[in-house]
Image 1 (tube, rainbow, N blue to C red):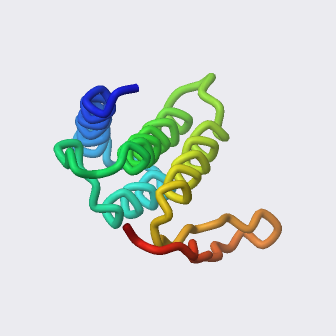
Image 2 (image 1 turned 90 degrees about the vertical axis):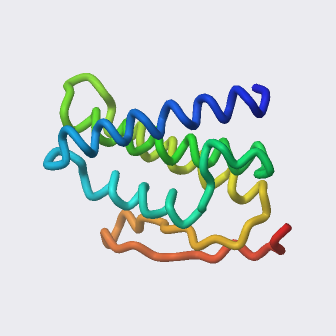
Length: 123
């Protein structure tokens, strides 16, 4: 996908997430809120043309994971693990960018969140 197409898709997901939050704030999940916090820390917006394609993809995947989390809680037939897979793919793209970023990892046995630092140099 070309960078311009990624930027348009990114803008689309920004609109979708904004609509979800503005219109149905009580049904947004903690998972969605956590993903939005991570998205905000990335500081990548659709109009940031100078950012890498991998960074744009990571931002898109975080936003789409938020949408998937919302849909899985409000609609039948949307798998709960879809949001988790999208989130994992977002962090894979961030690792490919070699960004220093704290990645929350769910500890399935304990139900606690651990953080792991990606050890790589910034651009």
